[in-house]
Image (cartoon, rainbow, N blue to C red; front, side):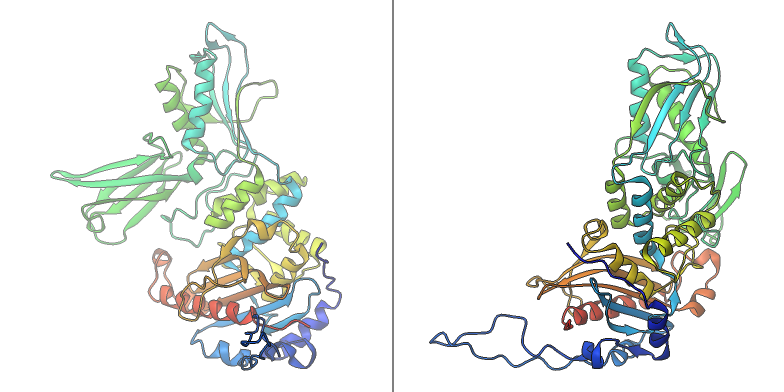
Length: 510
């Protein structure tokens, strides 16, 4: 069983770390000294005599490695022994920078603690009256439980259960109950209107609150569809509407039409055909329209949906459970889905009895929990996904939090394996180094944090943050999906990350 570290002198440590650019707090800079003997098996002579292999040359100074990477902006990193908390190497570890999607690792800990790994989100269909000759005498209710993974196929399963029960109509209303989570129009207001990774949030979510826009050029113009696509279904929707406008820029415009999303797209940007996901700003009505369409296909007649409260006396007609939370979080860390991070974070805060109504309120509660549970104070997140650029974490706080969570904790098994690579970016297959980590990417911001298991029973935690805030500030909102220069900058950041991981796998541990 791995020992949990006790960070009792964090402030004194950070004060010392902040005093220099590149720092090691192990005895006499032991972190910059190469192993005296090779960690590989030594070759044997013809008579079986072991010949000593020369020790590898000392590692280059960390500061020269970082400063030689040609990466503009601010940079911070730290690597520590996962069991003792000893910092082996660090470069400006007290500097607080945007963690990007690395924040999802902390959200994972928060959600697992509040909800439990076996927690399942439930989506239910209920009725307020009895069923007579297939007709519900009262209202029918589609009640969301905040499931971030519900897709059109899942709604179809609920409709099938109603059809199998012989239900074919309702005398009252079709109510959408979405109060399980706060209803928010988007995750981050500073993102472009059209990016699918910045959808709305609700207690009733569908298809990650995205609609698929597809176009194909024809002789008379363009054939356009807006669909609630899932693995097996493509139901059309009208809750999101698209018009082609004769212009070149901007590519997309958005207008809030109350209960509809009004989109336009530049004709000059479409070409022959294509498709992309767009965010949905009315997720409850989106789910209600799809449910209505699927019910009609099964001969179930329902009125137009309307949002409302879940009646106290409603009885359950059908229910669908999500995968367990552990599976949901593993997929979240793999695919870095922002909606999942925000919904599980909000659900965790609600489960703690906190009446949160915004992401800032919920993330503030998570920041406090991280300090109380792990003693980590330098965490100031404004959401649960890391999408908001105002979030700040120091690399020391991040690595220390991962160390406190432990190699025997839930994160290493949920994190995505990172393939060790050489300095040219080529995968290294014949290595015993195992890296489990979470990446994070924003425009001119890159992050990586996780666990390293290296030969010699060494277990390390690390965090690497880099950002160029000046370049980020120059980007107009409408260009933030693919701004000039960001891709090349992020590529340089990833190369430095690979260099550091290779370096840290060779560090001696006292």
